[in-house]
Length: 328
Image (cartoon, rainbow, N blue to C red; front, side, top):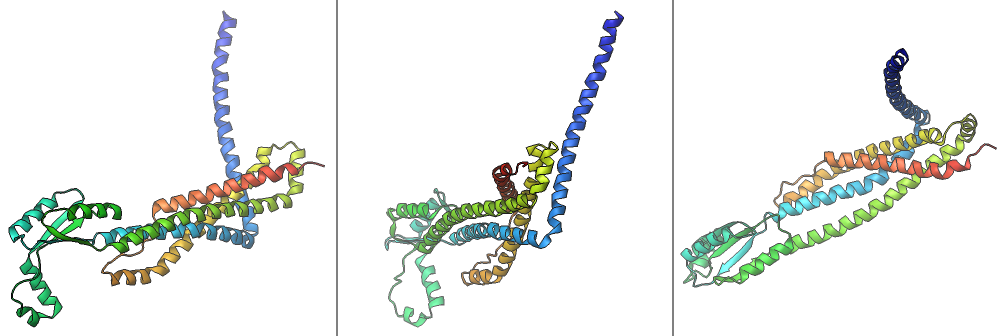
């Protein structure tokens, strides 16, 4: 019984010791990674000019697609903002009186894809034309009002140009409508240009991402060559490949992170320089549109892209070139 009791009393301490060792093992693992992370940053600080040049090249490569993406996003917002001013003018037939015109406007106001409608009577149209045209004396000589009633339709700003064209085709078939007019060719061209640029940005981003991988990979390769003797010695004393690989991966991490931060600075400085001419151009079209700086989502995406590319480039370089470093 004492023997059995002794075995029972020994089990909990062993279990507790294993749990303590497990906790210590995880803490020790994280502590070693943190030490290597800080150590690699210190190594880069020993040659700040070289590290800055490499990080700047990476930053420029990341800033080009990021900046173009931000500009394309602003162009889409600008197109949507200008599209809000798009109107469909329905010129009614001569036999349609004011009551019928107002009834048609009310009917269309509840239709799909229509935000609002406004009926302009022939008398209102003539008064506005008299006020803004400067031909008041000529108009006084007319025997009758030649202007028809007009129903102005405001399409849904969320509609793309193709959907607005379909809406225009439906409105042209109305019995009361003589002519339906929409001037948005420039909006269609803007959307087409933005779509082309967006595809170009994706292609450019892929190519420059490959360039970043090559830059980081070549930098890590040179670092491996410069530390060849150190790697050979650590292998001779029993260091694992994971231990040897770790500082190079964190070096790639720092290069990617620094490049992403430099890219953010370049993109926002470029947006600030473009702010005044863009605002001046928008003002010519009666818009108060202004360029905004990079959003939080864009910041996080760019930082993540830089870190991932840095780690991936370092991993590819280490996996390829570390095998060639063997004790002689």
